[in-house]
Image 1 (cartoon, helix red, strand yellow):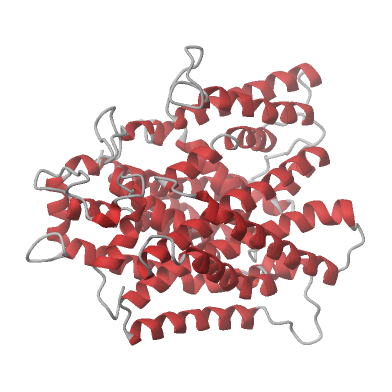
Image 2: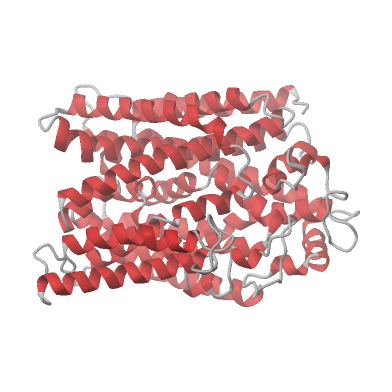
Amino acid sequence: MNFETIDIVIFVAYCALILGIGLYVSRDKKGHQKNAEDYFLASKSLPWWAIGASLIAANISAEQFIGMTGSGFAIGLAIASYEWMAALTLLIVGKFFLPVFIEKGLYTIPEFIEKRYSTNLKTILAVFWLALYVFVNLTSVLYLGAKALDTIVGTGNGDYMMISIIGLALFAAAYSLWGGLSAVAWTDVLQVVLLIIGGLITAYIALDQLVPGGGVIAGLKHMYEVVPQKFSMILEKGEVITPNGKDAWWDLPGLAVLVGGMWVANLYYWGFNQYIIQRTLAAKSLKESQKGIAFAGFLKLIIPLIVVIPGIAAYVLNADASGSLTTETVSSGFIGLDGTIANDNAYPWLIRNLVPSGVKGLVLAALAAAIVSSLASMLNSTATIFTMDIYKPYINKNANDKQTVNVGRTTAFVALVIASIIAPALGNLGQAFQFIQEYTGVVSPGILAVFLAGLFWKKATNNAAIIGVLASIPIALYFKVGPNGWLESAMFVNIPFMHQMFITCILSLVIIGAVSYMEAKGQDDPKGIDVSGGLFKTSAAFNISAFIILIILAFLYAFFW
């Protein structure tokens, strides 16, 4: 790819600006030693707009720009349910989860488990989350980000993979390890503006190329006429077949995106994921945090414009006159090493082939912003969980502020080194976004069941929670080893992974309920949470925002049904 001087200047300016902001906001104030609250919760000083922007910046990464654009290429607008249903999920988290978390003064999500259940269960889940962040989240973001940069800047054959991984890792570490959540959150405000602007520019250019006369509206109309099946939000079996021959219904099975397993994925991610929920815990107040959640909900509504629509446009640009795609009609930039069509090359292909010189630097900076902001958030949350849930309780109970902050920095650095070593080995993940959802879907249903029971059912006991979360793994694996899974056997059923998650979560809740009843004979658990007394009362601003978001969602699903 040919980068003009202006592209290089824009990209370098972006890097310098992010580092400057990160280091400036995280500087030690005169006469004040940075403590745990400063480092891990940004001194509990974040305003609503910073919280909302930071939530989106932490969420939007290579998974979306590369993975979800690839799914838009392969499946269509239906994949946007992950974004649009997330807007509704955020409202639920803001109204029903945050009041409990903030009232208890939490630093980490595992800390809630300790206060509601026991230290043993907290430690089990803390270790699990550390492993998930290091070996799945950090590793996949580094890999997908480096893959994108290698495709855009290099040839796509892996020549720049290791350099890209190291560069992204060092960039994220440069300000997040020193500054903590303060540096992460305040730089996220700029990063989210940049990634939205860059994403919209790419979408505009892609749509403008679809018809000879150009124009975004004309491009949208052309897409809808050529591939109308890719604008269906609720898929029927056999309605959309991906370029590699897979029925998209297996990834997004009809109404499950509205009333089934999508809720398991979204509630787990937005409600009980440390690197997401941590910035809401750093708010000035509960009302400020809830306003930030609502702001993030509005931003979620526009994300499909920058991560799904470009994928559909890339499909149409590579399809024949009938809207069909084969290895003969598709650009060589989409053909993987195994000879199949590489869906996740859609976004890099757009930047490489359509974005003009002079704009490439801005778009590349937007992509880097999405990757680096997520990396920084994950690093800070990994450090928070290890320091507050492992180091302080078990290794050094009397650790002072300086020791605590230094351990956090060391933890983040070690996690980044491990992820950087593992990332190149991930190989070709196909539709990476779907791969990550399915992998996480093995463990998320049981954890969600434990949290839901702990939040809203006073009778749930610690032993029931431990049995429920452990039982959820073999239940989930039962579905995974079915036909087309890891083993071929008539003993197993074959259903979409969203159905698997939903059934696993329901069965886990049943197990928790049954064990709790047998153990406590119907009595309330001593650690049960009292959710009465107006705990869930929300402000007029939040309620009005929620109503507007619900109206917009109803229109979108009615229009694209």
